[in-house]
Image 1 (cartoon, rainbow, N blue to C red):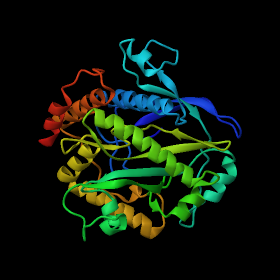
Image 2: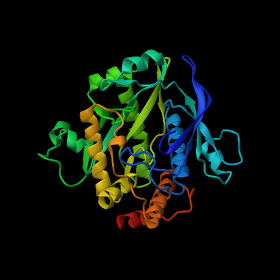
Image 3: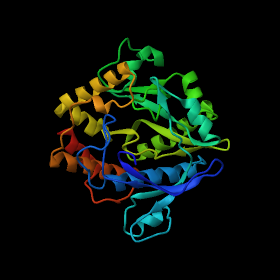
Length: 344
């Protein structure tokens, strides 16, 4: 189980064959890598499942291979495409997917053993990378801490106090299964990817980015950044996990974030002691060479006010309605939902 969705195996993958299983989306959320937070956001799981299924079907229409097979809804056992599912009057919260192998990633003496991971994985495995793409560099982006504007051909001496649009998307590689994920140079990413080609991963990320960006623009949403995860099976790379949702990607509408970033920034403003404690614990874990940074954190997050929870719910649902071009959820207009979170 992840912090926001449950993972079910119906048929396990083998060294040679893909298996079958499902993501069961919950209303939980996570920020700052904490895992499950004290609150739930109503309808969040269904909105992410709907948006993710919609995007997977868009990718398949654009000849981009994925692990998506369909969705299930209440009172229906069969696997349906999204349109069929919504015609039942139910919103889906279960996504049926092909499964690959995910070996353990050993950690010893302060290092992760990717050679052991790939020795067990063979030619059928989840690539232990996140491939990140960026179309815009908003205030608060980690890219501002790691690079200078000139590194990307931008005519600024320092990062300005406003979002910066990029002429061409930037693609980066990050670890996936480490307790504190970190960005990698190309050589290190190539080593961690195993048999998978990082050139192909980059091409795939750019193709996914193009599809999601175009769909977002039709809803007057700006697609700022996002990521994909991929599986490798017998020489072919498939897009895996979930794609282009308000948790995986960052979108904005009329200058306002429409993503999990809203909740992240709210915690920064209202619970700075916890946010600072998380950062300090991660730093201590790095210095001590240990993986479990949460055991070093002595502050826990507090629950959100009900008004904040419902504003977040409306943002997820209104954003999904706008993105897929339909009234899937009973929610205010995206404009009204955005105005509500501006006041948080």
